[in-house]
Image 1: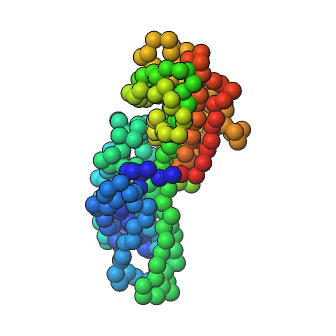
Image 2 (image 1 turned 90 degrees about the vertical axis):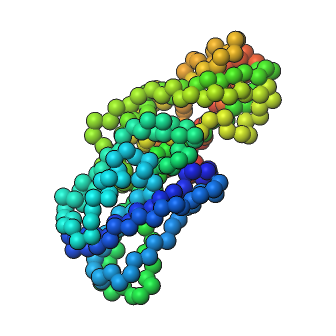
Image 3 (image 1 turned 135 degrees about the vertical axis):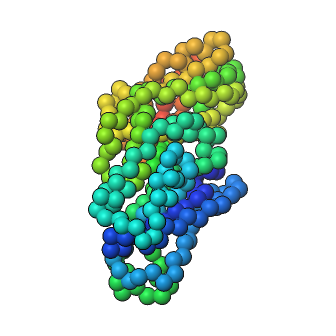
Length: 278
């Protein structure tokens, strides 16, 4: 499921042929309103017929320094193997308030999305269409709570274990970034869980970088409540993926369905974890 602000807000395409930048175009003002934009058409006129590499980046404003980097490639500039390698392995790091962050943190600038496509245009025809697949550079967490405690309670935090990476590559299908540090994340979540919450509405949505392969015990989750009697929610629980894996990839949605029982603790046996397409 794609929620508001998870689509394309701006889109840049850089076209390289024969070791030179041919085009560097950015479309802005996209994806306004509640319906996220999932694709965008960009037209280049009268480009040379040649082997071509397209670098597509959406929402560059969501990553500090990325807009300046991408804007530095001017048509006509040299773009050789060094520049290609630097682009493909570009590292994006923790962004204050948005990655890791919740749905409110991406309202203005969205999420980083990128892709690279190589196409042989030596025999291209007028009006030829090139499709460039792009992939979100983050994973998505969605928490649902069924409340069987018989009482409403106030949440203040959703606490993730030491699996939240501080960096990743901008583009997919590249080697892992070097010197990744995995941190805990105490995500603010100020809301009241009603006494009759049935687990159908999300109480928290958050975004992190892909984790890489870690130890299974690194994947934990706990809740913090300011309501007296619900202190047991702070006990960390293992996130046991039904697929028996110990990693989270970019562009995956992790759905956690938790039940708070009559003892005012999360029912571990009923903790359901799903990894689904985003």
